[in-house]
Image (cartoon, rainbow, N blue to C red):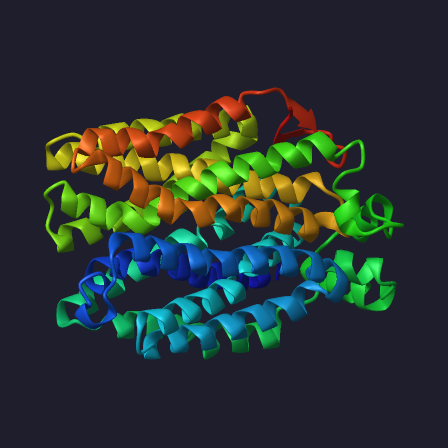
Length: 424
C-alpha cells in the first residue's frame, strides 16, 4: 500500500516539472509573437516573475503543511496550479501571460516540500533513498512531457495548447488524491490524533513507535526549530546549495533550446536536446540514489556538481555527438545534486519541522531559480554568440556548488548518518 501515496506524489511532480520546463520549451515561438513585443530581456523577466510565485508558494506551503497537514495543502496546491495553467493558455498579452505564470508558480511552488515530506514518511526505511529519488524523477518526466508537447504542437503555432495541457491534473491526479492519499502519520501524531495515526500505520505498514519516540510537538515555531544549535549550520548549508542548483536548473530549462538554436541547431533538434536532458536526469536520479546508499550523499553531490560543469563545457563542441554527450552528462549531474539534496533535507529534520525544513530550503533556493532565467539571458548576451563563452558562464555556478558542498558536513541528529548539509 505504501506505493499508492508514492505514485500520487510522483504524478504531482510531473506537473511540477511540466510547469518548470514548459516556458523554456515554448520560448522560441513566444519570443516571435509579434503582437506581444517580447525581447530577450522581457522574456527573462517573465521567467523570473513566475519564479517569484514559486518562491512564495514554497515558503508558505512548507510552513503551513506542518500546521494544517500534508493532504490538505497537496489538494489545494494542485487545484490552484491546474486552474492557473488554463489562464496561461488564455492570456491575451504579455502582461496577462506574466500574471498567469506567477499564479502557476504560486500553486506549484508548494508542491515540492509537501511531496518530499509525504514520500519520505511513507517510504520503507531500508529503501528510502531509492524510493524518494524515484518519486523525485517526476519533474524530469514532466520536462519530457513538456518537450514532447512542444515538439508536436509548436510547429502548428499552438503554444497556447501546450499550456492548456498543464490543467490535466485537475481531472486525473486530483481525484486520485481525494480518494487514496492519506494524511501523514507524523502529522496525526503531532496533533494528538492517535487513532487515525494507528489506522494509517497499519494500512501502510509503518512503524508507529518511530514517530512517537523521535518527534514531540515543538515548543516554538517550526521555523525557529531550523535554527536550533543542532540544525543551524546545516540549515544555512542546505539553503546555499539549493540556491546554486536551482539557479543552474532554471537557467538551463529556460535557455537550453534557445542556446542550441544559437549554436546552429534547428528548433526541433533543440527541443530534442531539452528532452534528452530530462531523460538523462531521470536515469541519473535512479543510478545516483543507488550509489549514494553505498558511498554517501556528499560524495555523489560533489560529483554531480562537477559532472554538470563538465557537461556545460562539452556542450560547446562543434559536433552533434559532442552536444548529445554534454546534455546527458549535465542532466545526470543535475539530478544527482537536486534529488539527493531534497532527500537528505527531509531525513535531516524531525517530523515536527520536516515540511518546514524542506519548504524553506526549497524557498530560499528559489532565489537562485528567480535569478536563473535572467542569469541565462545575461550569459547569452555577454557571449555575443560564442558557444564556449556561454558554456563557461553556465558551468561557473556548478563549479561553485561543488566547492561549497566540499566543506565538511554536519551529522544528522535524527538518523545518525551523514547529511547532505554543507557547513560553514
